[in-house]
Image (cartoon, rainbow, N blue to C red):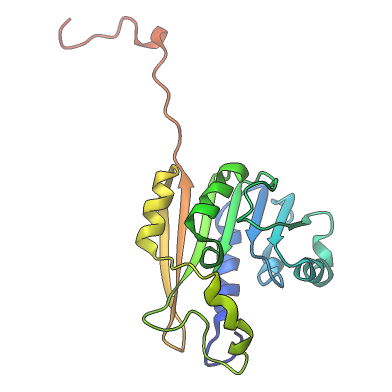
Length: 209
């Protein structure tokens, strides 16, 4: 995905940099951490914990080896988000880049209920009538992807997240050299509103008084 004709890895790296710097949060969860692309931008002066979630234990070991500067901050989480019985740690922010296509809306939103983040930042791929996996000499590695692939689009994602209590607060589109595009969608959990205390309402004049 680093090929000049694709540049997906480089683009996701730039997006991850912006995602990590966009919010001052203490605990971050990166879903589908893979090799840790973008972890170099973690600001340890603000984040005390970064959870890297993946189903592949080799990826998690690789992340720890590649980023020794995050020792004590980075915590690998070996988990399958589609398994609703698994415990997941709490986090203030969830980053899920090209991840929803693997787990679908239902598994993702169910997991969010357990993680309980205030902020969620997702990147989804706009295929524009093309295959999800970009054409390259290595594409055959992903031949079985169609067995787990879920179609995700921005409008449906925004609608789904709204139903979970999250407002859409930011979106952007980045076109790749091969004609595909990456759509970033950021969400913030709605602030609960509480009725004004009775003691503050008492004695307030109205139009009838």
